Length: 152
View 1 (cartoon, helix red, strand yellow):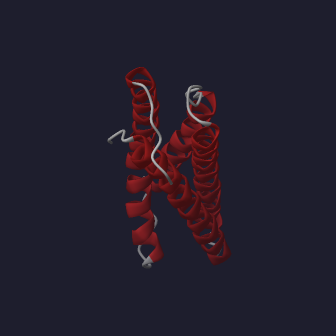
View 2 (spheres, one colour):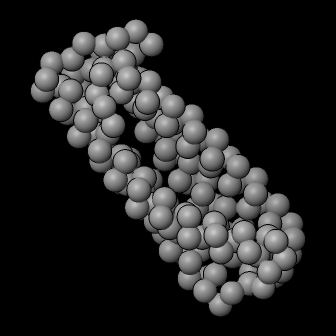
């Protein structure tokens, strides 16, 4: 992407937007890591801990809250159309990612309740989808930040 020249005020707005997204991502990331660690044990054949339902509920709630928070965030208006489009796509990708993560946790709850291994396959599918969405959204955000010279 070619360089995008912004005024100092517009760079500050873009940096603030990025910070808000990273804050949301940071809070949700902690819940996802905790749930992921608990699930790795289960996937390796370990026992389902009594904490798993609470951990999964917390992670799912955080994902849904992250999606709602991101939906309310407005992309800075002063950006060129191509930059705004990429930021909108990034935001939409992040929302889709958190929605897929939340759906993956429904599969985990189903597995914990029924011990049906097909639920784990559904979890892996939704989790992989979420990771792919997150990667694409993050790349678009990085492209805009690099093009505008706004550091992370």
